[in-house]
Length: 403
Ligand code: C2E
Ligand code: CA
Ligand code: CA
Image 1 (tube, rainbow, N blue to C red):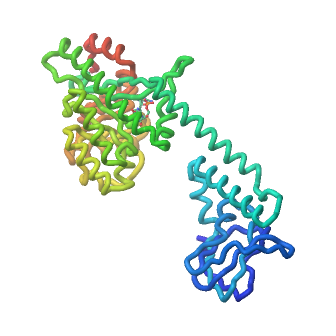
Image 2 (image 1 turned 135 degrees about the horizontal axis):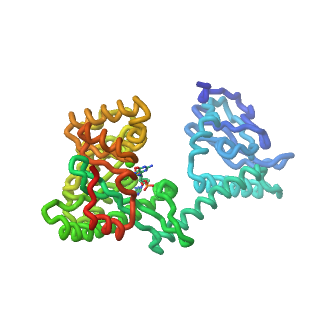
Image 3 (image 1 turned 90 degrees about the vertical axis):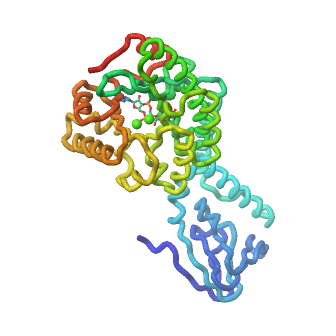
């Protein structure tokens, strides 16, 4: 680990750095006083005097451009040096628009101070890197706008994939999976736009739409179901909920309203969340999950076994179902490890009294092996792919059975 924070002492009158210097550390004044000046060749203009607790040199730290001012100690001054390496990671992971705004503000500020000191020339910035930041930001804004417009123009659709009860072989529920219908035909996969919707916050509105539409469609499915299989409970609806949707607890009230207005039986609604929610902020997750459970819905952990090895959260939270990720299911017959992992997840779920859904079943052998293990539900292309509401209804009318 390089030493990225250390202290340095400057004598009275000593320059910390000079205008035009290449250097990119920032300084935090611990004791003493400095003077910040611009202008050269006798045209010196003092623009600031800084004391204990103040910071200087931060601009070059951000954009790596040459120093745009000279800083001189006015008395013995001790400063903590903050190296740029500390900022490189947060800057490169910051969203492109934040980065662009930061650069624009810096460049404008540099130009303004130069004009103040009578210098006509523009600040010396690295045009190539500026252009790259600008184009990343514009790409992002562009995709964000397309997503926004798609929501307004109702270009999203839900497809439904059956979840099969493995002992009976009939439909026990559906998972609602979002699709973006392209104007030129075909669909954009959610893996391509959900992350952007999460980053931009649009997922909250999108998530409300998903909840509303999936419950409306569930009512339609239940109606058909009652005429086909009146003696069996209608299928439940599993809805994916992003952690972002739950970051504000008030959003749960909005979701509750949608559920109430839908007339759906909360006991037939399952919300699928991922482990990230619980790992990133356990206290908040506990509040959110308790509130959701208060609505009478059940909670499933999606993609179980992928992200995190910490199992400690499992008994701390009010969960009902584990969904075994499809990588394990898909490799059960090819890898001993995968089949051992599936086995232990099943044991774990049994011990904690949780239901299991195995997703990604593509072959009849996988379905049979999971049934042998006592897994309650199976989901996968072997049984049925996600499909629009009308074809789901046609499928139900054939009274499908997977044995
Ligand atoms: P997920 O929640 O893990 O959904 C299951 C994914 O597995 C779906 O992909 C489904 O089509 C796919 N799948 C099902 N059976 C099989 C199989 O036998 N083989 C293979 N190879 N794949 C199978 P899809 O529809 O592309 O969705 C991808 C992800 O997008 C979802 O993963 C979920 O994380 C996210 N997503 C989809 N709809 C929504 C939504 O409404 N809200 C949120 N927040 N996320 C959503
Ligand atoms: Ca899911
Ligand atoms: Ca999953």
